[in-house]
Image (tube, rainbow, N blue to C red; front, top):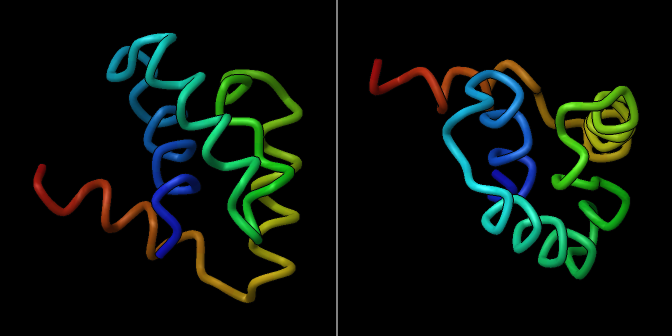
Length: 75
């Protein structure tokens, strides 16, 4: 499970959970990650993030629901 993608999805589900600094740091780190290079976590609340998340899941074959389940497992 890619931690950068997990944070992007978590931010979409819980927009007040992360600071701008945390989001920027994740965006910088995700640009360096192989499959997350195009996911801009800093823009997780705009339409572009949703597009790139979908592209990520198409490219990797991972299941988005697994990420959502991981985020919600402690609730």
